[in-house]
Image 1 (cartoon, rainbow, N blue to C red):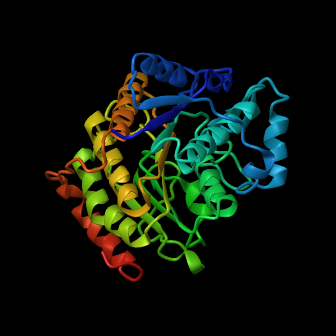
Image 2: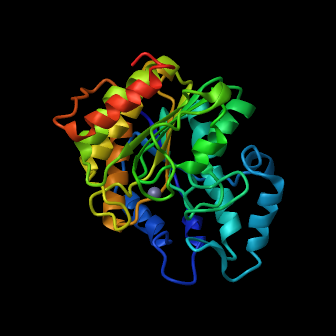
Length: 343
Ligand SMILES: [Zn+2]
């Protein structure tokens, strides 16, 4: 068995809207309930620390940091029609970034083999100087920047299986060859980015890998994208750390997304991320919660991910059965990326 950490805190409840919003405190409450019934000898719980200003500004502008801090003075503040803040939001957002950093530190120190940071607000839409799509700070992007700038790693891979494209993460590393960003997402869909032709620019050309998927795709299409695109490119990239933007809004029951992924699908994707990390970087792997708005699907899927993280990395990895609807997109992606990678 692998040693896994879950990083979580009740304080993630303190970011709340004054009206009904899908990104709500109950998401963390149900995960805490799930965890209370999920005890394993190889699973330990770690309390997150808050990220510092210096850490957050590895990815975000100083002015934007101050702007988010200032929003806490309001009972309710809208960055845009989707994205709110209240009195507890700034502290919770710092704890969300810090939760992923806590997980990264635990893995880098060898205290555990891998970790899952259950955090909110989510992060992957947050831009350098702008909140959007329920996200204030880009938790996973800051963790990648921390690994590279502070801990001096050379290459970090981010796998993003949230149903939405992580436009913030993509943009932050679009010109970097240090961070390989690989996303599967419903397309066309919010936020509109993530087309096949978006492959990075300058030194970062080839280090953004987008797999835009039609609505209604299920586990098999997702696994095919992993097996024919993400795994071969990831092996050649040879990351020194693998981060996962783990959104569960591609689950069949999710009220926002229209995909058909199941708990078994999340476990199979987690197994692939774990295998890639085992092959390239001694298994160094951290997942961080992004979306997922059906509470029961979220709890079941997060549990499936944690179960998978705790299993040995050499378990069999059966390929997709079917999933042929994704073939055309995969072939186009391979053609576009063949300038940069042998796939
Ligand atoms: Zn999402």
